[in-house]
Image (cartoon, rainbow, N blue to C red; front, side, top):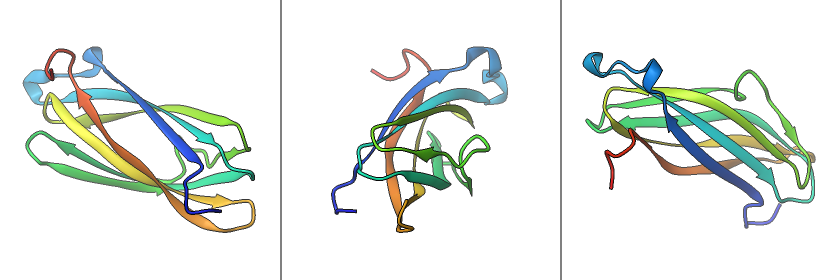
Length: 125
């Protein structure tokens, strides 16, 4: 495809108080990702790569096939949405990464996921 990226990635996050244990430095977050294909051909998500960083600069890299056990095909104009989770050791952290994707013609590329915040409500102003 062209150099402009026709894959749009939108993220929303939520603190999971019921799954967190602040005393044990365990903070759970859910993140929902919407991947929209603004291109002219179908695209398949093959692999994911995440870098999760807590407020102590503790970093974890996660690589794997697909997302939530799927390698979805996304048709032009369609959006694939999924929710997953992350655990960090501080009240605030960030996630960023990329998806390895493949156009219908077999051309592979990486779609970047801009850094986004994981934060307990009212901890960041």
